[in-house]
Image (cartoon, rainbow, N blue to C red; front, side, top):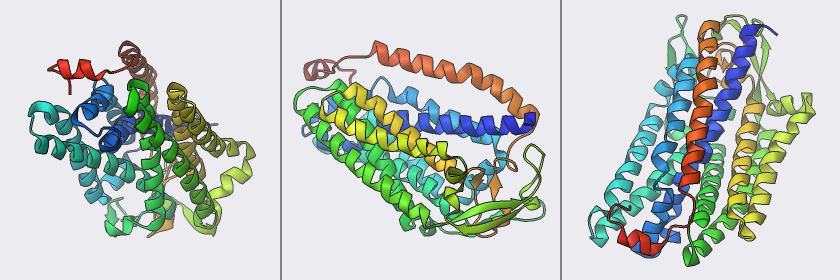
Length: 377
């Protein structure tokens, strides 16, 4: 395999790793925000839940930076096309993300019940909306996005915000939210006791069952969906543009990679195994094991989507022949080479300090400690 093609595949895999890290770590924080008003029925109970993720939520935002930076540097054409075309979605995501730090920092500054309830609802919305958008974005990739390029590779987006809210995208958004709720619930189980732990356990079990059902429905749905097939174009590893290829739409084409390489069926199997075993672990009060199984479930779900789509990254429903792939939307060989070096240093560093922070802050968060600490959330 050509060095350039190998680098492109490497960065496709690394992008997947970063998206999985984002889903697991940020999804965990957002899951706690989503379930905050259920697991915490009193102000003190909600403060306990917030302080379980209090030491970690800011550090977890680095996965957003890594993911966005990877797309910008490794696949700049994807970045330019998606961020300009999905501007309304990006603004919705941005505003919901802005609400999260405000909710964490301002919620407990005033004793007013109305003040704190307002920020509790803000944390719920800012936890639920981004995860639904995250999942819906993956769902829309299977339909393709309505964009096309001019001769000078200037992209034109011809869709609307409401067009992105199609039934399959909504299903994927609900799947993403269910997995986020599961991760948030088992995180609360890890750090809470008593009734808070019991309520989180109930949510973990319900959300894992919902995720299993939605993932299965999604699989059958994709099987009957038209998929994109790259029929001709420059070979992999050769510098190219989206104007140099031909793409066809075929029924069931999104399953082609699985049929060509049956070992890839292990990827969706990981998703189902993580959800099912996570359900059993949560039921058995093995919350730490359930957390790791939730991470496996995310790996299986995102890995399944990436495997089905490969080599497509952003298919075009307007002009399929101008779809963006791993081969025609990546940076130069020199850029990808430098980026591999940076990733080899910084990704393990992020994993290390995140693990260290969780180790140092391990243990239960007790209500009496929260109420006595004026600096607690």
